[in-house]
Amino acid sequence: MARRSSFVMFGAGTLAIGLVVAALTLLRTNEEGPTDAGGTSAEMEHIHGIGVDPGDGTVYAGTHYGLFRIADGTATRVSEVQDYMGFTVAGPGHFLASGHPGEGQDGPSSVGLIESTDGGETWETLSLSGEADFHALEYRHDRVYGLNSMTGQLLTSTDKQTWDMLSQTAIADFAVNPDDPDVLVTTTEQGLTRSDDGGATFELVTSAPVMVFVSWADDGALAGVTPDGVVYTAQDPAAEWTKQAGLDGQPEALTVESATEIYAATNGTVLASTDGGATFSPMLDQ
Image (cartoon, rainbow, N blue to C red; front, side):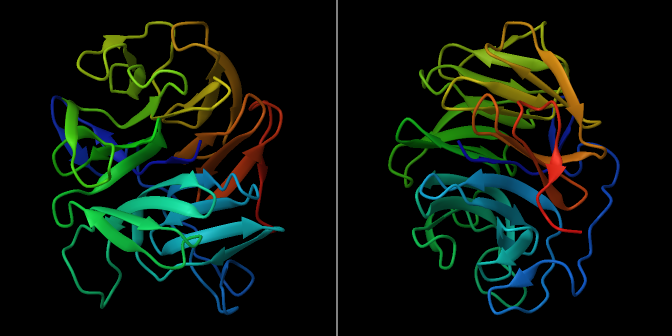
């Protein structure tokens, strides 16, 4: 399941937009770095979400400067330049996102929910333009879930047009059980929380460490990462969480595709693990 998240600071009863930890070290690419589809230099900075296209397994990263396709050690920008604060994959070549328009683009400062059906090259506004800035998005059970940073509301929609509120509380990220749409987990300042009633109520999961990002794969595997970049995995949110590798940097995004396949972002680059988080390697050639 594609995953996606931006930086939301845990607040004392409020949801504040910002960094969850101290200022991130930014990656400014040079002529050996990421490129546009046309071959020109591009900036892959502030990675807000990672997703994997189920059609061909290609990894995508939503960033402050557009959507990038990562393959063969390089990152190529496939979209126009705009800020993708939330990003998730809904199907082969089918992406959902949120964020802000790029320089010189018309429209409200927050784009609401936008959709691409051509692998990220073009996008259409679906709903909540000017009303929502989703810093976390997930598509599962034929519905989209989104964390609106403008209001602190966790919302869901079955048609991508009309929305229902699940909860309104200070959370940084969330994940939905692949087998049950009523079971969700969220990351909070107090720790991981779990809901068994579709988000109406949440209880603290005492077995889990405090994490900033969390992701739930289709095969049931869970992964989370702490604010200082240590990855943990589990097979059930209430079960024991196993400490895995550190990212050697503050986390920017996380997605778990399976019990063995995990992707994370730190310092403006994407890391991949094929051994369940025991080790991570950069996906981009240095």
